Image (cartoon, rainbow, N blue to C red; front, side):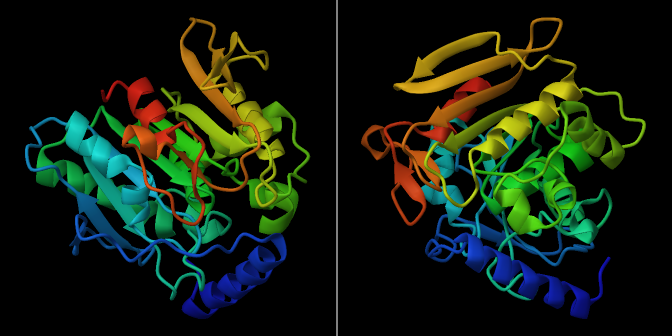
Length: 322
């Protein structure tokens, strides 16, 4: 685990990179009243905060969704993105980790720091401990735990898929980055701009090194990416496909290409015909989370964008939550 001084230095470097790339955005409001903070959830080596939402009629053995916010946002992302509304409708609980400025000046999850992206250490370990605490408290179903996130939270989603694949059935990355992309590209800023030059096998090897000896199953992945995103370039969705199709033993050709709500949608299946990677290219959308307030799914906010398609709904439906 990096020293406090090293973490603060790294946070400053990340701030400079994010400023240059335009990653910094106005945050959501402070954690919404419907979210409850949980303390004492473990050793918490990443020094994160844990919030959660448990619907009043939550049954035992219900699924759990982990929702990871973007830079300068907070746990309220779980509300604005539509996850808490869907939790009420479909009867699952939501865990909303929250970054602190002691770790990162702009509340970005540290998806680019070796001490935070490895199994058993840093922020990744803290999030894994939150999952364990939530499952124990609500008697949740450990076989139906899902993770999703926006931007830096999307980068940390890839971290959780790679470092703790046995904990998650599936994942959703919105405007995020492949696992270990910062090291592949030579820093977070080059990664965000899609400058990591890796073959599918090289991308896949980065995941396999995160969990040596693990033979699966790996979480299925769905990616949402705006075609006009100038912060996390659309080529990152291509690299995510390359990485996770290789890990899943699938080829690079989509087995289904159609449209959903008018947007290009592709599905990649493994040799047994199971969908393992899915993509939504949101034409004309910039950097943000797709929501659809007209259908009651999500609420617009800075970088929470009404594009008449709700990422949370599409994910939850695909995951069998409703």
